[in-house]
Length: 178
Image (cartoon, rainbow, N blue to C red; front, side, top):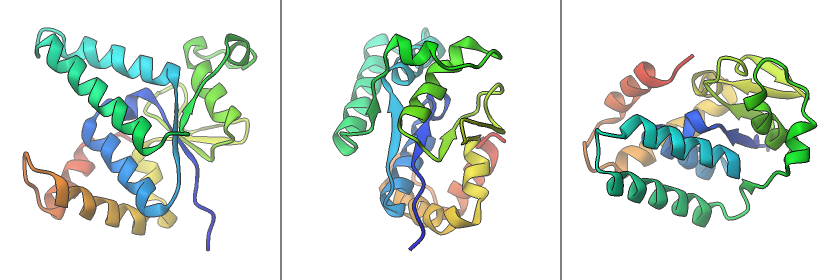
């Protein structure tokens, strides 16, 4: 059997609950492990709170984030990467110093892919690690069969709104950034 890729999910991938859930279902079907760092989670939570501030009740926002994060840690208890300041600062990446923590996490766990929509990272190979968009990742032939199963699984558990596999695929075409 082919080696399953280890993937690190960046904050911008965790942001959308549907995309985040799709990746976790993909990992379950593909028998692989997703990773993230404490700093990535902090960034995701801050961006999410900022995006929905004034649009949703603060308590609902925090409840959603806490619930999603608790489930991530329960389902993948060994996936959270803790980094020291020294590990982050040792990364040489001058384009955006704020991205060094993502690179450091990927390097520490020797992941195969970092799934990101960050313009400074995607499309690059850094320390031998490919930084690609969710769309590019799922377009790779070796991931297609697992994606199909993950979509079917996700469609079966979605309650609001209820969607078909075809509607879900149209959603992905529209929302997976290149």
